[in-house]
Length: 474
Ligand code: HEC
Ligand SMILES: [Cu+2]
Image 1 (cartoon, helix red, strand yellow):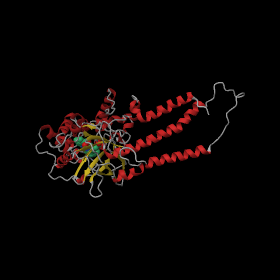
Image 2: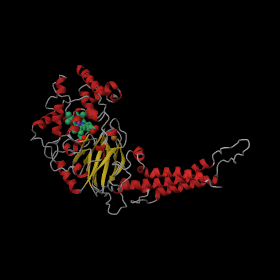
Image 3: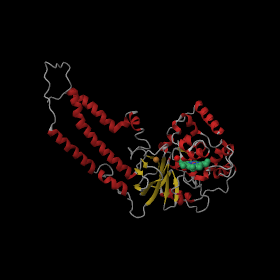
Image 4: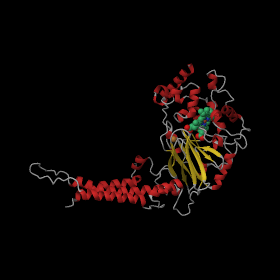
């Protein structure tokens, strides 16, 4: 068979471009970002050794198996796709082909030799994927499962998960945030999982409601949190950092806003953090606005909204749901499955609303006033909205899909003054010796993400107002 040079060049260009894009999409302006969000961003698994740090053996082993598979599929693409594309060019109908005069090539069907060799070829490749120790970790894919779940490693200097008494964090998923319980340390926190570097960490995963999935892309994951079952995995980081994590299984309204942070820190800082977490909240010396805020939090003051509706008591208060440990030796563990975040050390966290917004006065105030606007459908908003009759139990689910009720989700439960006072109080909830993670390790990508699209048009404001008036009448 004579090789047709022109067809060969076309084939090389097409197949070559495809393979290049598979490996270096990030090098082509826009394509990488377009295809995958941000190929080398904070939540990327593609650069365990990239500029954002070496991230330990698990991320590396995932990366290794991914790259091995990618190389092999590239080989398949060239060896099978290549002849196919070549045939398209080389054997297409010639320009002056005349059905009557010119002869058709010999028509054939099937070719046992080709078919058998293709089967053998793919079988060999599958074996290579399964058994070849590849990359830095050299974990063959077939061993990757026990590796990930049982905490093995081939890397020098990595301590693997001890069978007895490993460092443990119990993670519970809620709609739409994560809580973290440290059984040895006896503490319970939410949305920011702090752990020491160079320590194998056993993670137990449970859910309080639906299926969620735990994933810190740069360190390890993802494993589902299944109702009625405890799954586990391990993680190990060898570089300090403020890594961003994400629920990776669709779990309802605010799934996309169900983030968290994995904060890998030194042993010293970790111990310092634990000591701070064990302290009760200081409420005795509160003054002025912060004291007002505390009374509002506890619900001892009648809220303006309750007054307006002629209620003698608040139908729901912050303390109805949130734990605030104010006594010495307060025990948090009984609340480790509570569907509401522990607020005792709120201001030590760098984010609010499950890692979704930065923790600062403006964001916290907005959250308190209009939680439904920040995070659609969240449970806190739902309870206030039902208590004040902004929604009835059956409108919760589709409130965002109906123009006439969407404005209700933006209803403000607190006046500016109240929200400011509560915020002031919440921001006192920190001990002075707690580490500041943002300051130490910078912020991960969430803080650079877009704000939620809220249509803050005049039109929308007007409909909010009319919804408010309508509700006030009822
Ligand atoms: C129905 C129970 C409920 C009530 C009442 C309630 N909250 Fe919440 N709160 C929640 C839930 C649930 C979340 C988690 C929301 C999420 O991220 O999806 C939350 C989250 C928060 C957060 C963010 C916590 C974090 O670590 O990210 C703050 C701050 C907060 N609430 C303050 C308040 C204040 C102040 C009040 C009173 C005005 C209040 N809450 C009333 C249930 C409640
Ligand atoms: Cu989830």
